[in-house]
Length: 291
Image (cartoon, rainbow, N blue to C red):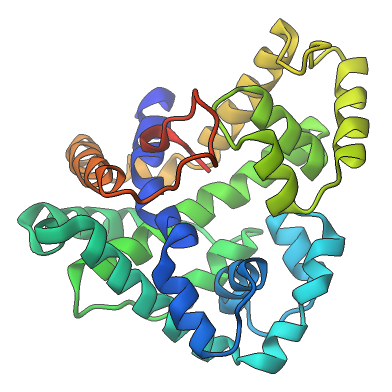
């Protein structure tokens, strides 16, 4: 596959997973377990596959969150609810959210076929040095329902690509905060204020990171990417794609079919309001957002 095709397919699939971070069903399910704070819910549902890990592991695998924010909730969340209970609640939430967002499409031939192709793609994923992917890959498949098979497969593909992205960021010499600043500078990611709040960085910390990137010639004084910054980020994305090609390449000609199916399903959940207003920048396109 051409790199552009790999990136396009990954971005079409990704919202089918990441809708879970905005789904009210998660708040309801985890609230029943006693986990009520939105940040605690995020950390619990995404890290539970690794077991009752401490804040250092979560910070390392998430990369762009302030470790101090994580330490406010981890490992305390595990005293409230066991990881296995969190995982079961998350799957119930994914079921409810997808049924609500997809409507009739949840039981469509397109959804079932996409689940088959996406699951086949995961068979080419390798676990070496991909901690979040490997943890989720150890979970059992929800075989009884195609829409949950699809969601689990996309989760694996998303975390596999995400782990590769961290390798690319490290190789490029970017800290987690610097990577976040550069992503918002594209105008296609989070609104700056949302990125700061949800990732736990103060305006002062953000400003210091931005100043360092300006000194490296990667950011303009106004906070956008310079030509060198855009090229730098393109190189990081190219390396991310190189490290993430195998699962999609294994599909051969069927990759185009999965891209078409994923595009249709993603458009359906976007039209149903999977992502709230005011979170992403005006230039963001959730149907083509990689992370």
